Image 1: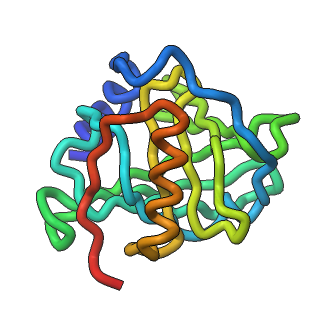
Image 2: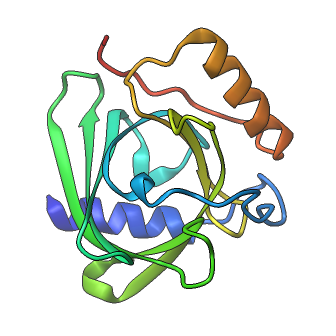
Length: 173
């Protein structure tokens, strides 16, 4: 079961999409606190690795100033469905002002870089993408975003060139 989740995530990273030719580089520095605590996935580009994935969360735990562990949880078919958990590690890309990081998959056989393209000034939400522009995620510190903040964040996602999004269920706050 764990191997299939890992393989699904790795496949998701390898499948190209028509989103855009490449993500725009991050627009501002990211506080180190980004890599600590839980993020709830509000929206994402469709991808095979997260098919039927509801109530997805990513929890970062800092190890050092540059490294962290990651625990991702996905519930199958509903926000209360069976949980699948994926654990990995990551590292902030040097010289990126914390706006770029990489994570290891398949026991370190696959490494994927991610960019924090934008975030709220109060760090309540963030837009994360792969550098190739194939995948994007809107993350929030709360499972349900304030409608005004959500509207503004989604407008920013669309301004970055991502049109096709899915909105996974999250449990009510």
